Length: 111
Image (cartoon, rainbow, N blue to C red; front, side, top):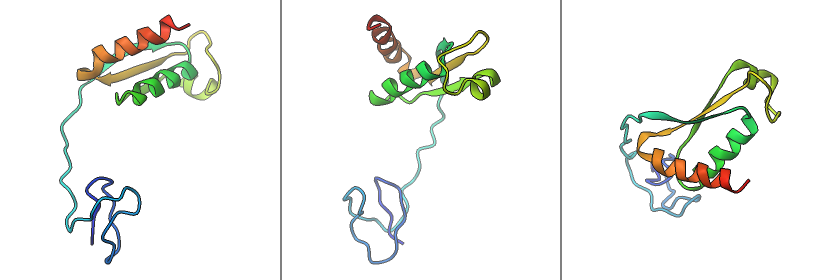
């Protein structure tokens, strides 16, 4: 089966070019880079909505980010801007921490 080396999708026989990205198909699935990522805490916020905005800004700069929330934040405040006891922690790969801090600082300065 042909594989797209960019998208990493498998296609049916006869497809020579990826319909999603235009890359030429290869006959074997590309090897995955399974380098472990060390996630570090960037910040803790009281609002899951603001945490999602920060994650979006980081992702727009090609910085992966993940959010860890407490049960109160996740269940009760999914669409709220914040309540006492709620929190959302944002983690980024260690190698992106300094760049992420600059982006976070810029967002705070913009308010």
